[in-house]
Amino acid sequence: MNKIRLSLLTAGLTLSAAGFAHAHATFEKGSASAGETFNATLQVPHGCDGKATTEVRVRLPEGFVFAKPQPKPGWELEIIEGDYGNTYDNHGTKVSAGPVEIRWKGGNLPDAYYDTFVVRGKFAGFEKETVLAFPTTQLCGEDGKVVWDQVPAEGQDPHSLDQPAPTITITMAGGDDPHVGHGSLPQSAAETVKLGDLDISGGAVKAMLPGAQVGGGGFLVKNNGSVDDRLIAVESPAAGRVELHEMTMENDVMKMRKLDEGIAVPAGETVELKNGGLHLMFMEVEKPFAEGDTVPVTLTFEKAGKVEYVLPVGTAAGGAHSGHSHQ
Image 1 (cartoon, one colour):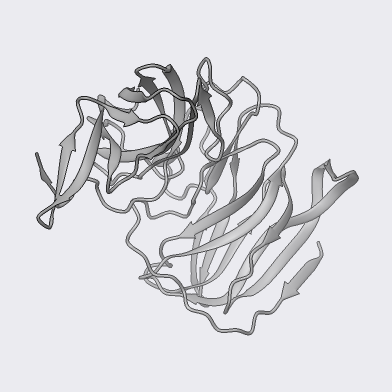
Image 2 (spheres, helix red, strand yellow):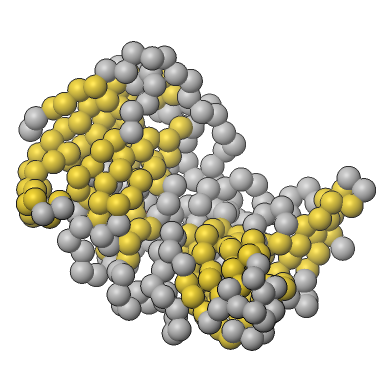
């Protein structure tokens, strides 16, 4: 294998953030469409038994091709090249070799902080929904090491593994995705689902802490028509029930209320559901949402009707109801 080295001499600061719901390394987005060029953003939430991370290695699976890592100030970048198992078309050129492992070296990410490591590539050669594992290794100085390389067997819950490899689920652009409902376009986290005059996009759900039974999330809905509509109900097999809520400030107190009348989607306007305002609340959740998972929902609009949609699970940033009063 050939090695390409890029030295970054500029010192940099690592990013600090709130704690994660899960301690293992994961991707910021857990799904992508076949044929899509994708920024795979690896999140590293801790070091090795308290020691600072000084090197991160990511092995690239077959089908993630033409990879280009993002340099990080203060880290040396090493690209290991090798042969692909197949030949891929890159704008008319047949390519059978390229980057197969990326290493960020010589940095210093303290255990108390987290940071992200990004590599851009294309998902090519897939004919059915596939879960791709990116085995990852953290090195901490001379003797610290954490390896995230376990891949679940068929039917096994990945959350039962001690050191699961970060994964990305590749979905099809055709109609084979079981999450795509009648009357909607195929969906990935970055795509838009259409229902009549409505465009639904930007879905997201927060990861939940172990043992939690309430989760929050939302999406964007744009009404391109000339008639007002209203979101009147949301259902999900992942929750006992889903409620529509609004968070508002009253006399410097944050209050939450359930919207039994639904959420208006005026003609020609875009309505955003997100934490801190209008949002979805997933109640009686038996299995807490884990970062990288997806949550299917059925949205019912007063005029446009029903459509199925899939919300990707991102990071945890605190419970939506935490510290607030309710009406």
